[in-house]
Amino acid sequence: MTASPGGALLVFAVLTPVAGILLSFALGGRAAERITLALAPIGLALAGFIAFLVARSGAPLVYVIGGLPPPLGIALRADGASATMMVAAALIVPAAAFYARAKFATPDGVAESRGALTFWIMLQAIWAALNLIFLGADLFNLYVALELLTFAAVPLVCIDGRPETLAAALRYLLFALFGSISYLLGVALLYGGYGTLDIVLLGERIAATPLVWTAAALMTAGLLAKTALFPLHIWLPPAHANAPAAASAVLSGLVVKGSFFLTLRLWFYVLPALPMAAPAAILGTLGGCAALFGSILALRQPRLKLLVAYSTVAQIGYLFLVFPLASAPAGGALGWSGGFVQVLAHAFAKAAMFLSAGVLAEALGHDRIAHFSGAARALPLTFLTLGLGGLSLMGLPPSGGFEAKWLMLRACAASGQWIWAVPILGGGLLAGGYVYRILAPALADGVVEVKARPQLSRELVALGLVGVALALAFAPEGFFEFIQIGRPLAGGGAS
Amino acid sequence: MTPPILAGLVGAALVGFGLYGLICDPHPLRKLLAFNLVGSGVFLVFGIVARRGAAAGFAFDPVPQAMVITGIVVAFAASALAVALILRLAAASGKVTLDPRAWTKRDDGGAR
Image (tube, rainbow over all chains, first blue to last red; front, side, top):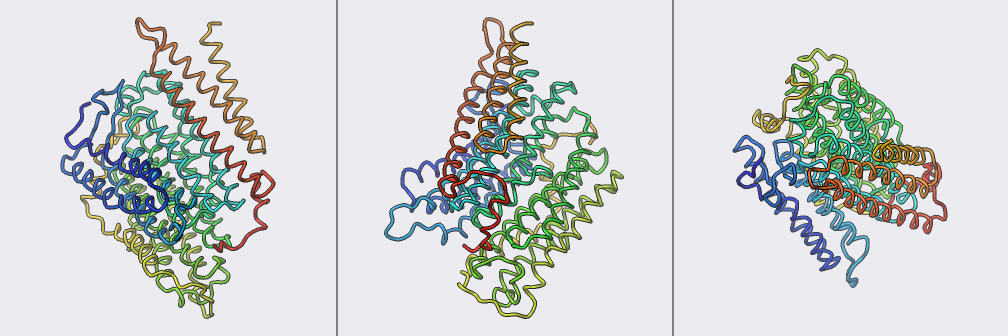
């Protein structure tokens, strides 16, 4: 494996936020905010240019760190999937940062406030860790990236220091620690068996031995705990519902996708030699259960932020249907595309909904759904965003959610796996139920007391994000070819 | 029984005890200690991998040893973060529990 031209950009994509963190530490609270906002155009330009280079060459972009190629050295590798995720991160993180300016501004007359400095530094750290996860090509390097992501995400949950947020953060951390140590044990076994941790080399060498199955099971269990797939989801709703809105948007939209992305890397890139029918069926079943149970629990929540958090549990479930669908002998490419459109549609729609829930909670002073009567008349733009985000969660056209479900259903039909249509359609129906629960009281007659008028710019940020989720419905054919770049043939050699 | 097999069995036992504690013990501090037990087991497995993967002229394969050092640093940082959270939780509320029922009474409807 050799470096490709422009490969050094991958290093910059990871190191730009890291440089931002170091500068923020050196220059203090007020500068940290400006540095994070200044990174936004740089990060977006880097991600966009990497995507352009991958699309132009039609092959993954590779950088070999220190000129020392694997198996001894470490490579960074950007394929279509990683470039797409990097662009998504480069849109959502800055949107959350822009939204958070008012809440996490350093107050006048104070040189630095702890909450503000922590927020801005952790936001940049999440960005750096996500880029490393999307680009990493070495399983141990990815372990470190996964840990960085957790260490940056946990403080964001408890940034306001209330006891229940501290308990939620602690529970999140303990689940994540179980996940990382289980993953690490799997990494140790794979290194013991093959003497390398490079994803491409392992993918070529691995055979279906008991050692590999054990390592795969350990690593998958660890990643599932971090992704909050049913039944390991119980840490997610309190953590995501108690975090500040801007943090919830990043946690729900992007952070859980980091460990999901690694699960995809593991099964489709490292372990293509394993017969995938049984593990794919297990992951798909857990995903289907998550889609149904998460939606039912969302229907029962009294508070908007908890409802949106349980909806994340349900939407994560759909992501795991990509395993049975993309590994099937027929329709694999459709399933892969459907899974990725679902990742993106959920990331943008859910970030927009959490930001809207934050606007709502600040304007009304509460987020109890039962007391929403007439709220849509007072906050039309916010409820428009919530409604359009809900449209994508339900999977109604025109939205990215619809596109994702349509592709997945076509993959079901092509591969004859009709059983997966049940959670896809049933989950959509239940999503309709919980979105109705938000909108029906808000559109009813009534008068709500608006304590503080929301800033128009914050409402527009959320609307912009949901706009991207809707625009995914019009993704051209070239986009689907782009996310297939660098995807190995999966499922024991079948495509 | 050769030393690597003995070390492997010890590693497996440590991981097993640790997992049991991590899942079954209700107190967060004891969960954290159990996590460290699992960590020790995993680092021991890395040690065996290093011993068995020794190339000609070396007593050990240095790569897993480098990984263990990184892993210890990460586990140490994680433990420090968890202890800090436990201390803050105890200072803020006077009780340290993960039971969600203990926190539902003070529901302020998300007003912030």
